[in-house]
Structures are given as structure tokens and as C-alpha cells.
Length: 109
Image (tube, rainbow, N blue to C red; front, side, top):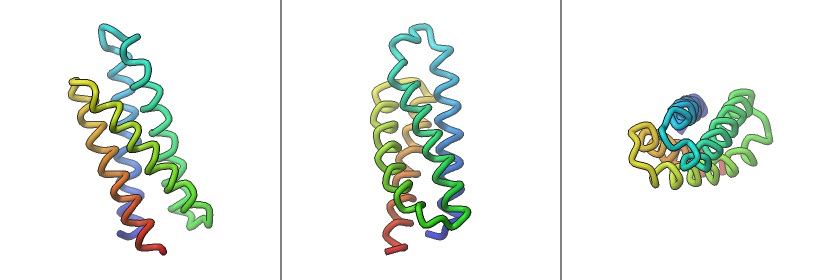
């Protein structure tokens, strides 16, 4: 996987997390969605920062990719607990992003 493909997956994941977070805030039982919202927020942030470091060729990108995999998987697991379409779409984007990060990481070693 090249860095441009990874950057696209990171951006798509961040967007899905932002959408999920915003949609969760509109749910009837927002209190039930607090963990999802917080996890979405963290995932969106790590994906944005990681994309920036990968794009600039930073030597620190590998550290962030490792964290990104962990947070994307955590976010996917949380979103998969909820039946809302936005949560399911977010979980899918997070899983795809984590896989893209793993592929990129393996190719760089």
C-alpha cells in the first residue's frame, strides 16, 4: 500500500468518525452513546494527525500508525455494539483503516 492510499483511508475514517459522533449527539438516548462519541472523537483525531505525519514523511509516522491501529480497532468494536447505521458505517471505516495501516506498516519494514 502506498502512502496516498493510506492517507485516503485515514481521511475516510476520520470523516466517518466525525459523522458518527455528530449523529450520536442527535440520538434520543445520548447518555447511552457517550462512550461511542468519545471513541469517535479520539479516532478522528488520531487519523487526522497520522495522515498529516504520513503525508510529510515524518520519521514519527510509524509510532502514530501503531496507535491508529489500536484506536481504530477500539472505535470499531464500540460502534459495532450499536445498531444505528452511522455506527455500523463508522465501524466499517475503522476496520478498513486499521487494515490499511497494518498493510502500510508491513510494507515499510
